[in-house]
Length: 512
Image (cartoon, rainbow, N blue to C red; front, side, top):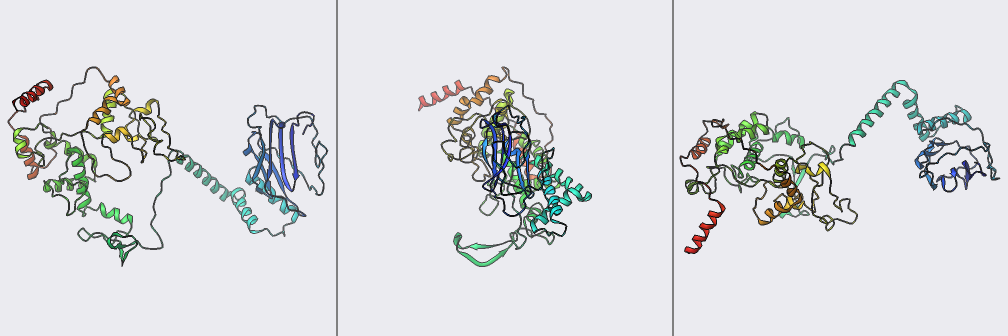
């Protein structure tokens, strides 16, 4: 180290039996200084390696004692913030002494080797092991920890076959890290290997009062039993659920999609197929759709295509006097579905109609428009979602399924439009029509942007084909009854304008 030139250079010395490394461009303005937490043993030889990669960063400095990397305590760390990091000087290289007059006393130095590369952990161990065997002899017996490290070094760096295997493992680990950067960790349950699944009945529902009988894994007696080939675990349960002999899951799935399309299921209680649920209005239709769904490999697209191509779905939604008298609640689907879209569909439809919708698939969640200070009022002080930072650019116009959801603070627009909360599961959404919903659609910044970007002239809607396939069996009595309802000779009456409706209401009120 050049004392005359702002202490430029480096020093390596022992202080209170601790190793200290000092690298300096100009002390203390531009310097890096650290020391080991471990103290050196007395009256014994110690192999020491110091490595520095020239980056000026604290993590670029390493000290190894007997081949093991040491934890360092940073004393000065001002070299990283400086553009000038050179430590070259014209002072001579000293061993056993420092330029400021301090000498190395009370110890000895066996040898000194300077390596022209950055020493890695494996390199440090190999060098230390080589020096240990040279100076202590081949008869020296290593301890358990050095022996394990020596074996690991041999198989990772010396033996050709295992070296290639370790290189392949390192490449696979690198690929694994790259894949993990594109996603997030998720907790996954695993079956217990040391015990079979079991449960106990809770008396009157109290968690601390259990029945003495221990129940084993099984299925309800009213449904087909699990076969011998089905394991008694979650995998076996999944196989049992999708077994064609099981009548329940496929019917529940078909009924749920039917209810989603028509606003009402064939079984009105979509979430309850038990004794407390309602009876199906068209049991044969439900049976046929279920069998067709299973025979086509549980294909959701095929199921939806079958339903929407049927005459039941394509019939008019206009309510005539005859239909009002015979089927006021549309229990028998005598008219087409007519109900409000879900919250996400309303927003996506507005974005699509205005041409703002971004149809990119996948990627992280986005944060569209939302009123200020909603998250702050419910978030914990240390929460990483305490503050809502709105995104910009194309992220504002992605589909609603990518919107970031905070369980304790729902997105207000979605909440007002009856989107369910995420704390509990929801089988069927509530559909309401309130003035607040109209207020949101008229004033939300997202919908205002959509209205500004909407085309001035609406596009012409495509007319349905006259002879489109029904998609339902001709021999199904339920399907025939549904089609018969739609064959009304009466033409739907023209809907009166808002002004005429207002005048009619005034006349009725006046007559009363």
